[in-house]
Image (cartoon, rainbow, N blue to C red; front, side, top):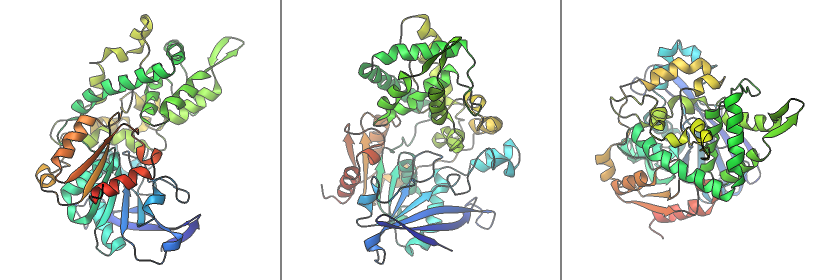
Length: 433
């Protein structure tokens, strides 16, 4: 039964769908997906086209908006919007340390999670589309990993899409995970350098914190072990529009004086725990590198291996001289499955996924080259998370896709630039610009 209720300016309806766990076995086990339908209050009784929103990640449920926040207000001017929790996230068969043991041991868990990539998400969308739209194609809006899924959608089932809108999510069609991270570390270094240029006082603050962590065993509230590598991973924030400022505020009051000397403050520790823990989105850590698996080569902890090619990210070496401590970005490492209580029980499962060699291709270059779906994509020139060169190469490979390359926004431009970003991309896709 669908339940409808109201927020300011909108009518919301909870939707539930049953889909096969493995779409290659449609008569086998099923899982339940959840999505939230949103329509403007003054249009609730109208027949409207549908927009499907695919969230970034992997591993995050759809945005929980209140009213017409961010880009949603612009979308609701002409669409009913379906905010889908992709499989394994939110209320759609969540995959966590609590639920995965229901599948069996690590081997069974890894086999289970191999079905939680973009190809399965797209087939979920196609399974539920007739129930939502009556069979009509819908506009798909994909943010970040949701954009990756949209390119997979254009590869596997373009007949299901009326218009494709991608923001910060044009993936390389061919790059191995090693290639992705080999391109990523220099981008991250540039972001860190820009942060220190904006806040030069943070150079010494970061060095003091890193030095403290190298000499102390710090366990945050909830049991998270704050190592120096974990501290460096707070650089993930630097890819957001306000990330540099938030990182600065976090660093500025890291220490307090106690009778025994200086100690990391409770406030700093609590903020760091909230930023570092994967308790709310463990699937991100488990399958993050798997989103790049497309052949017989294992991902094999690519971010960790490639990091060794960039010794400037070694905090101990930086502290031994006068170099700044560099933060890292959107990378997942095996040590995270030791430091984070939400991930520790899943370490062996993660190892098996990293060693997997049977990944199927996610994109069809030939079909994309013959694409007939109107499409537009925002490519953020200074994007820390998705390589601009990779995105532009893919933009050229998708027939008819119109890219908008801008350095006005960071990776979260869809949120920070709303409603301008969505409006611009809809106009581009419709050839109205």
